[in-house]
Image (cartoon, rainbow, N blue to C red):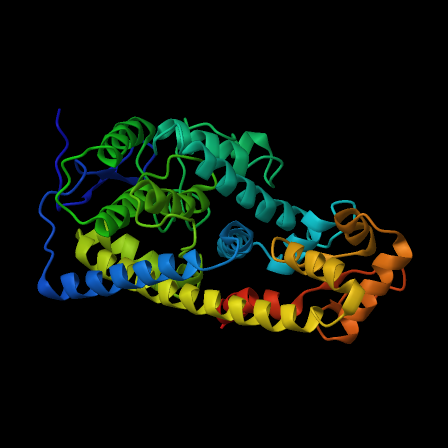
Length: 390
């Protein structure tokens, strides 16, 4: 028997176990009201994205900077889920994998997010955004994460009911579709991702697809992180950005209550337009901020290259080490030796010089096993992380 809908997004249905679950309406919605104000906001966001893509194109090696953007996104996205580890914790763990880091499970979740982002971007070369892609991404994301395989089921679409907020479906803030309805809705979502007859502008398509993915909640855990990763994958697949330089986790984290309430309003009231205005505002805000970060990176880079160029015979090694710091700004003596193919005394002397010049900061406080941070570079990114805490 066909289900009935009370509004455009779907309807809540009583389940045999005594709770109500959401059953999505056919997707995508056909009656969105894209008014003049929305068009104006969309135009602003599109221009901001174009400026970001242009700004990134002048970076000497954009892939080095992409690495840091991915780490920033990974830290912020994981913090939304309750992770306490920071951007620097994750960078240290990658630079010094043998070093014991506090909140190791939290750090692993950030590293998994980075790997899932890298894997997904590479996978887009031969696989469209699809159910298979999100399963592969989820498997990477949840590997060795907290919760145990019985709860996490990495890479597997759920076969049981889940919920969000509360201790059970009976008192949850939101109960996603039952398994059969979830599978039906996920198939509709997958077809919608790859259809070529959309009349919505690309950014609005991505906003609608993200909201519907979060509504479907196809995994027992990790849905929020997969959904945020999908935004970046879709921006690349739609050729809106040539590099993965826009991440909305900072905006969603700063406006967490509104993010959740806007998504819930889609389900409760069919308010797709309110969600899309919020989403487009986030794209515009974050794109402008990312462009400013690119400018800040260039300023730091050129300033410090000029300083290191005055070191005489040591300038060559200093500049090589400096360039390597843009992919990971945490360095110790061993890494410097390997990067430069020099002896320990030479590496230690260069690190000490760069610390004296104010380019590196010894931040561990350890007497042995010291580690240095390219603090001014990290601050371009961690400033955004700090803002998201306020």
